[in-house]
Image 1 (cartoon, rainbow, N blue to C red):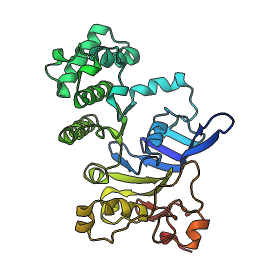
Image 2 (image 1 turned 90 degrees about the vertical axis):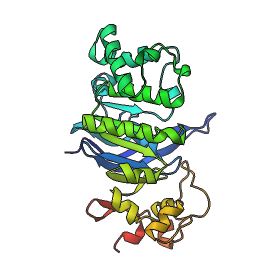
Image 3 (image 1 turned 45 degrees about the horizontal axis):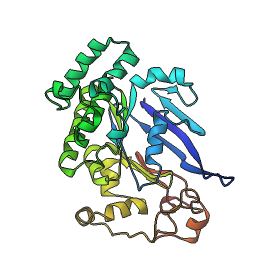
Image 4 (image 1 turned 45 degrees about the vertical axis):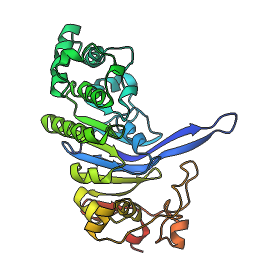
Length: 321
């Protein structure tokens, strides 16, 4: 049984002011599942809805339609009081570590707080576990970091501390929302390795959100591709990378010269800019930019159909009839 399931999730936000408010659909009818112990990679352009979807899976956002099931339990409409016990089992590792930690707390206080809140530990006992975990994430000696404030740490050091805070709870499910995008290239690999080490140690399920489809090809078991709030392709990592079906997926890979040359598929260049999420195109949302678009693509939205074992795509090119 999957650890996490989403069924036809819709998430909307209200934007604007002074009587000009309108709703933007950030996630539109998305269904997916994440098996226990596996990594689901989610990729797409900025504004495609990746981060919003990740927060819906954690019930940090309550969707306006659809269902969120965690370990078979429907948590879609649970009140916060009943969601809170689940927080010790599922957490977010955000893109910006400086925005994830209270700037007036010391690192020791910030990391011990979840243990005190979720497990009722005494401060001294929690701090002992914090010291051990800081050593485990490479912040050594722990005594040099435990009394520092967040602004006294580099971005890489603070991201390690944020990961340590999450792993202290021995989580079952993690959403890693572009956890390396604000870091220097020299330390990105070490942060990814750290996440993978904990994933193996605790047999965790991980949703890894990124712009870097090449990174997903190396670490993910399954890849989902998002475009303008919709999931447009999904499948086992190897298959999506070696045989991309949706024109948008092929365009993402075409933008990486070494990848397109090595795999030998036709290079695709999309015209113009990504559409407006507040006013998406009719029909297939890629059709104004797609070199394969037909009249049908402009008028009718394609279904998200299964085209092989574990392979799905939202494109008229692969839909019979």
